[in-house]
Length: 91
Image (cartoon, rainbow, N blue to C red):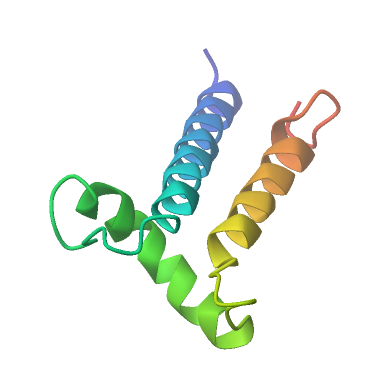
């Protein structure tokens, strides 16, 4: 395996894990009583919160619903498709 293949694999795993974490984060927005500083929710909050905090300053809650995890899921999905998709830049 060459370096480019290892890099593509690592990027694919990273983007996939982040997308999965944001799916969990979207589900957690449905349960506002969930305490994000307690186990197991902290496993989702630690990697996603640094990305959500600045985005919340730009995009305010829409109808009382925090849509920033949806935006980040879209960003990571778009990056994955552009970089690693069927005709991606890294293929």
